[in-house]
Image (cartoon, rainbow over all chains, first blue to last red; front, side, top):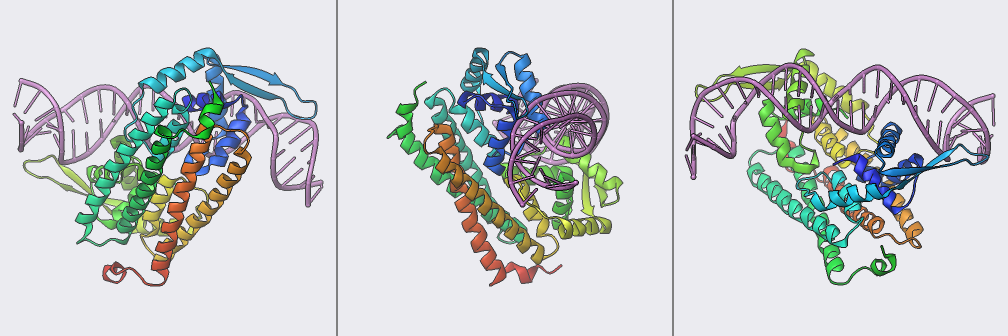
Length: 182
Length: 182
DNA sequence: GGGTTCATGTAATGGGTTACATGATTCC
DNA sequence: GGAATCATGTAACCCATTACATGAACCC
């Protein structure tokens, strides 16, 4: 998955500066990682060069200049295309969260499809871990045991969340769905 | 965190070839990521050059040659030093799992300390996400809402696991603890 | 005959981190 | 006066991925 694309996705939410993006991602903590300024600014420049975003330079009298980026129409199209085309089998948690944000951008259907994909992935992952358990019965290694347990605990939690979220999204749309529009 | 070091940690468990390592990691799925052969072999070569591991070339008549790597005494020392020195604040889930495996290598105390560190981290992360919730009350964005919910669900699950594991490790050692010896 | 598993390796490429440069304001 | 926040940017470096090369069994 492209971090570049992810930034583009964030901009659909609202126009932001590189610094803003850094803050948002920092707040999400280990869910998406903490990309450095070097990466953020470079990607923003590339997006601009490709015409996928536009900049507005805002000069505050008592503060440093801010460069606020907005997504442009070509950017929306690229994003749309990505959402339609991409099938994400086996992604890390970090990648999943980034995709979660991207997939929700343009269509609710893509969002649901994405969650369902993740669900399949988790079920498969769970099966592999549980199989490891059985093989592990004889050879007792504390670390392997802990990692396996940890993985299963997270998988169960994630599955529960996915099921309840999918249920809510398909049967009773969240309240904000109607109010958003676009 | 160094992937190189992580490989070294895996070798304390048992001697392995590059191919074996690949299989073990594949099995753990997104918990640790799926490093490529290119990375594994290159790191193994580097470890060998630094004298942290040793190789034994095993030629099977009907199979390709296997190069089985074992950790050497200097390697153990480097690992020990790393376990003693490293304080891991804010790590991704992937990094945490790698550290979990590494920390358990040499001392149970390091393992407990590591889990406790993660616990602190999760609590902090939880607080930030919950704060975001409150600020989010007015501006309603489905994606932000989902990511936040997802993060909190995972945090709760992880916290529960950490608490129960810490309790078990400190009060009633797991059965395997005594049988291991080393 | 062709795909899969086992098994190792190297080189180019890509892309994120680290480190550095700059500079004003605000809080202790 | 000095640390921290706000704010942007570039270049070197590290290192993982990708792509390529090789080769023998085994199963369909």
